[in-house]
Length: 369
Image (cartoon, rainbow, N blue to C red; front, side, top):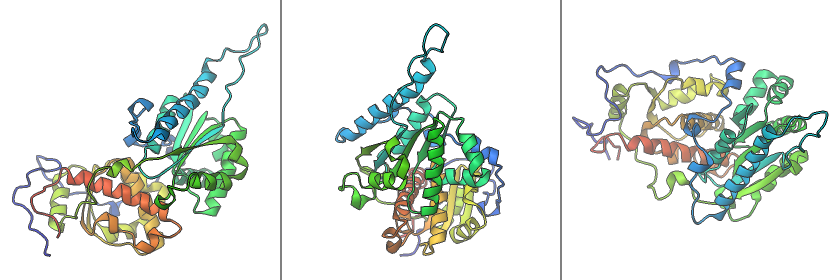
């Protein structure tokens, strides 16, 4: 079916600017990120900058979500309790240190609120503290070196690790060793990871993998299972149909802070930018517009797209795109392969961002059939 014509007067523009300005191109950017910025940015992403246990809305049909809140609130209490303990004196012994696990591991499906809970723990805990994804943690070690990373993070009370990944043995051993050193230095830990959809009925499948892979740290973690449906798509339709190129260009032209790129060119550009810099690539971007989204068949390219999708999702950037819907961007063989957790998470997030754009973009025409 041919693309529908661009409507003469879109009824619901994303934004209105008095003077149209040319959109920026991500492919023109080559950010340089100093190691100090990597450390300073180890905080929850903007999407979770003000969340709390009180703003988490458990599914009434999932008791495990209520239990997870209670366990993490208690865990935060052990961290706060250290501040309240009286100092030692010559006449009185100090209060005993709070007891409890060195870490909590949150295992569950996509979109059950694990990151919300992890960020809520971070907000509830006293500083110094750090929050980052597994990928960001490995990037930090690469930027600082292992010993300096240990020294830097050992000054923290709490380290929160989102999206712990077990698909790269080298990275898993590296992070496991790092966490062992941090636990020895008194740092408390909390980590999340995703259970594959086809494994959701198999109990603590992902938790068993996690505890096996981190070997000596297993005894320090309390695994928590969180069941539920992906909230990003709960009761919502499938991925919205893509726009035509003219609509994507029009949205980019009238949206302050929008970027406009051809999808294949952007994928090529990502190969020249280290994944630790993808966040900086999006500095000051308010919306992402892409022409010609197509299926990604190369594994290395697909993994780079996963990281970019995470950074766009962290920043809540609506995506307006032409080409194919985002739920078709990875081929079936990839979704069944060793990196399927990453790809399924990326699809969930890209579809959510495309839906954010669809709520505000023109609905009368402008869609590809």
